[in-house]
Length: 284
Image 1: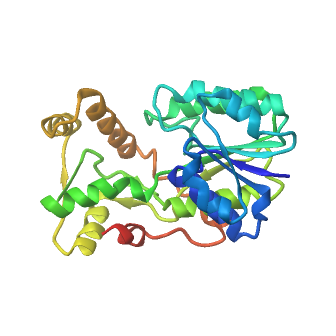
Image 2: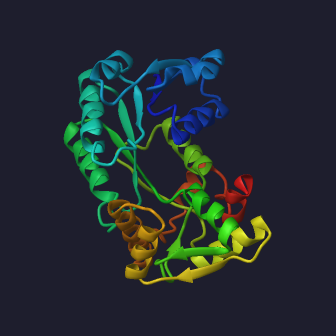
């Protein structure tokens, strides 16, 4: 049955489509959906079916989903809008009678203190209540989340955080996409909860050293208290809400929210996850 990938114009969704094709899924069995369907023209040229999919426009969801489909719901990118958007997708999936929904959630969604978690917990609950077979792909942190940090450290020689000795088991989007494609292309994952993270958890001193190696200068990790970090971010031009969000993320990291290493990601991807320095290297 067709595999419908939402968010295919985004960074993760696009990679999932590419990984499905690399796993010899027939292009005609893949539906790449996104709001900016013109950006999918090259995939259409390779035989992939493309469609406009907008979480805020339920008619686009009804037009693309059919009974028996495997659906990948890539989580929305708009805080405050995600729950309603995800509700629209789940409701459309129920109307269509899809065969299975896989959802890109967050690591340890049921217990993590990270400020991103409530939207993911709500979506997981929707799926449990939907009556549809589902698979939860609880993604940890993307190494690419630290590209702004790399660029700032290149300029200043500093990496600033209030994460303390917290550790992050990050992996690249390509790593997560490979594991996601493996789940979509195979049976047997109904009801599964996969906690996905990198093979190795690194600390911010190690991140500073990795960035220093890549940019060719010494980079130090400047450790701040949460209060100092908040003030520094505000002085740097961030608004109160964004600065508070960044500090809350570091607090979660400090408390171990992103340090979990289960091996699920590399097992599903069929290869080790990309080491930190190699994940950052293409952007240095």
